[in-house]
Amino acid sequence: MPARTFSFEINRVSSASAATLFRLETDGGRWSDWAKPLIVQSSWERQGDPAPGGVGAIRKLGMWPVFVREKTLEYELDRRHVYTLIGPPNPAKDYTAELLLTPNAAGGTDLRWSGSFTEAMPGTGPATLAALRGALQLISKLLIKAAERA
Image 1 (tube, rainbow, N blue to C red):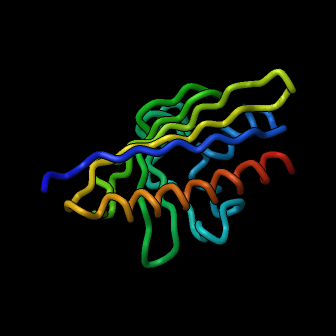
Image 2 (image 1 turned 90 degrees about the vertical axis):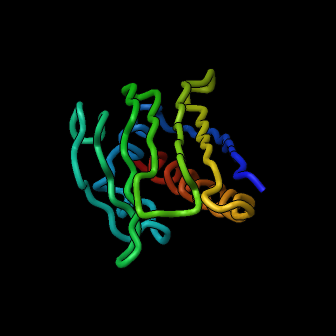
């Protein structure tokens, strides 16, 4: 059975500004301030251009001994952040995600977090999709809560 590609999309609305949401999501060194209990430790492995979270940045998120490393591919200030998972080896091969923030008529922000990947081993895709979608549903909820407090 050939490996399959999977994708997901999470849509939320926040009363916070796109700038506040973007600042929190792209600052890999501060995720542990707002993304607990899922992200207990967070740091920069490398800062990008513009610093800290721009193109080329690598954030390290998780809890010892399990950390994920995500590299920024595209960075449009206060609007769009695209990143890929670069480690550790996992069942989500070629995982890429995009956070898109759009100001809305109510004065807040529409948030769309989407991602796609190819299953590393045939048959693992549905479980990996459920785990990724579940994690980002929680993270997006925590992001909005933190942004609305800011």
